[in-house]
Length: 479
Ligand SMILES: NC(=O)C1=CN([C@@H]2O[C@H](COP(=O)(O)OP(=O)(O)OC[C@H]3O[C@@H](n4cnc5c(N)ncnc54)[C@H](OP(=O)(O)O)[C@@H]3O)[C@@H](O)[C@H]2O)[C@@H](O)CC1
Ligand SMILES: [K+]
Image 1 (cartoon, helix red, strand yellow):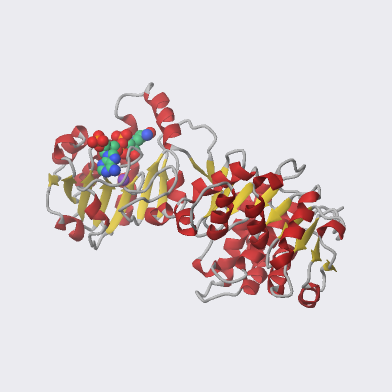
Image 2 (spheres, protein in one colour):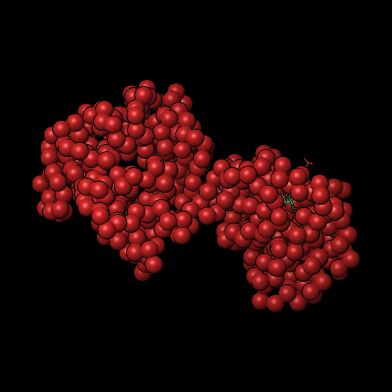
């Protein structure tokens, strides 16, 4: 599990630890870890050109102390101080003593073999200031290592409000910050290295499941299991106009761990042709027979409102996707109140914007994509439901405030029908008894892995390729 903590949590853990340590200890730990990562990135440290961009806070201090360590190993280090009068005194003195020198020449950025971004870390506020902002655009030939956070990225959310430095590697201290794991910030962070500095931290508000975490969540049938005990998932999807969405949602559901899939809707013939093992009826969720979870909405067309209402009237968990989300946005959060079982919403950015409109907030898909964590949390709190916000980093937020992020995906997943497979898969995991937060985050992880498996040669994939690859993705976790 990767844990990510807020700036406020890091600050209080830092204060508690610092109280019992000599001044500067944590900065030295941070600088030592940072220098080690930098050294590993250079073919050889001796003779390499290193540029430090140093702001006036402790982030600049970390960068200067780390650069001093590199200078002691023979690197040719220059420091560009963004506000020379306020530069970190101890760090600068250490660098000068080690043979580094200050520069005001911006070309040093372009010619360096390695740039250390020590402009701002967790103390950054608002957009980068004029002295710092141009470095977001300047060309460079070397690697850029962000110290703790790429400057310009909001550490708590991953939002990028203006110019930001695009790092190849980010070395963060004590814990991950949510902004390093969530796009757009994650795209600026590059590869993230965590350097432990001994902080004693509370439970993380944002987590990223790793392979072993997902493997531990996935259901394993016992000797006594039969198809009903493993859970039956109901899929109310597809219409005469969009039969394919039903076929794809069922494909995902069949590979999601439930013992059987019950389908209801107007695409029964297509579903059975493609997936003969499916139990089908045209009667709708109210009369379809017993299931442990419902998936409603993919390709639902004009039936979406009725199937949504019928599914919500059952006493089992319901996953709401696609056309049913549009209906839910119209009905507003009161449609979910008083349900005995949880609800999982799986919007993409456009659907999330519609759901926000249902809460009285005027926004659009682009704004949602730039504020992924905030949006997922707002929807979870507003609808009292778990929310899986699809996109380049999928964010899952629970109404209790916990959030998980997934980054197993690939750009090839942006293909028609991919979301239908995901909703079937997540619904199937719900039917096996997983809580919505676990079902959603495990489904996002598997879906992303399957996308990578299917697109392994680096070629486009279809949603059916993706569904077929779920089997390999699951097997790769079980190994
Ligand atoms: N926590 C820990 O456990 C440990 C933390 N450590 C390190 O400390 C870092 C936090 O240091 P920090 O608190 O000094 O803040 P920091 O990120 O350097 O920024 C403040 C400075 O930036 C400036 N500034 C602000 N906004 C700006 C903007 N938009 N654009 C440009 N400038 C801006 C602001 O200027 P001012 O407002 O004062 O004029 C101020 O000078 C943390 O990320 C980690 O690297 C490690 O040493 C080990 C232990
Ligand atoms: K930084």
